Length: 57
Image (tube, rainbow, N blue to C red; front, top):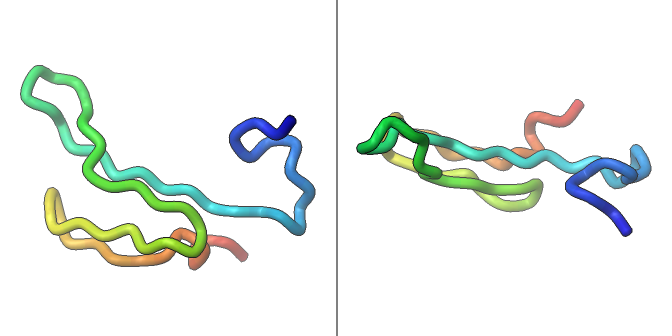
């Protein structure tokens, strides 16, 4: 069984990104999330639009 990216062979490397904003009660709220092959898009707290795979070497 594979668990959250570990135990994956190097050829199957992937990137995952989550964007958080400070929540109303002091915790963090997820604004956006994406993995390789998807676009991470958000307008707040700042504009962002990219594929997490672009972070890989």
